[in-house]
Image 1 (cartoon, rainbow, N blue to C red):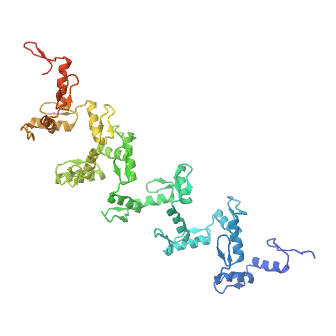
Image 2 (tube, helix red, strand yellow):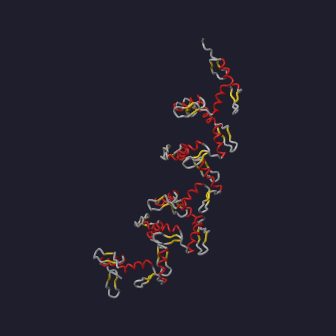
Image 3 (cartoon, helix red, strand yellow):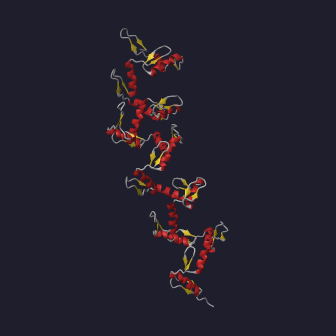
Length: 498
């Protein structure tokens, strides 16, 4: 006969049998008379209770032919197999995301509601799903049951372990379209892409500094706490961040992984290396408002500006020398005082020369490299040190600000004045072992010693005559010029040389 459909007044669902309609209507009543003795879960129908109890048996009789996953219920297997089909018939009207199962769609739609009905009693964090809350609560237990076989790192969640293990594979499947940087995890790529947006939505209430990531703000705020919980076992220096401690510890290893292609100088930290490279660019983007002097680094400008304040808070008790700046200059005072001790703990392996400061040794060692990366734009002369170039460039200015009180002779460099003043003292500290002649200056002494070597490296292109010193060659070449600049006042006879 003709099928007489039975329709539910509450939801409109149709049934072929009246009994099926009655059984269905129990769902709407909210009455669940069938309870599980093992877990207490209740059901509206006896059949649903029986199906549920199979879960407690632990028997998984239904296996997937494609992946081997086993299930306690045939329905669970059918639902699972939809995953392999690739068919996702359930789509979200709000965002378009599709799912293989209706239940997954329902779970997903809770996200759009914004309702977070499941709260953690321990920390107050709220979640839109009970399952998410359960996973979260494992964190508070402190139990990390999932360990990585490769590095031993432990995790509270199995998913966290899986995500971590991708790192060891070295495979970076997620690439940024804007800069080409690759990541092992999609989440890492998403975080990275926020940087390109330029939006810094997270601001520090204490100093106003803004960040693109919430995590970056949290890390920054630790600085304001003043707590330095991470200490170096080797030197005792403390840091607010674990990352800062790791960066610092590289210094003790002595390993310098970052080398400058232009001058050969090496660095333990990438940050120091980047700052150094700006020096070679020649770009001085930081200018002093008071005197106009420019610097390649903002830190150098800050140090310089203290000079204008006139405050010299750090003075040496031994010689009275004052230093104007706080951190660096308090440090400069300590460094300076080592000079008075006379102790030279830093020795060059190549020539044996010793220094009181490690920085002085480093500067000295560049000389042995033979690399002269700093060139003068005016004359082309090259130098191994930036400071040497600066000192040299004063010569081109023509300014001679240092005058001798005894004879009035002026010099461009303070060092040159000091060297000159030794002449007036009459003290000759440099004596030749071969002939006994003495000199006040080391330069004159070295030039003299060449005479005894017998080597005549400077030859005249016009007559072939050779000389031990370049100065002697220059004097000789005046003869060939024919110019007689020196005349006798008594008889008028002229000479090429005085």
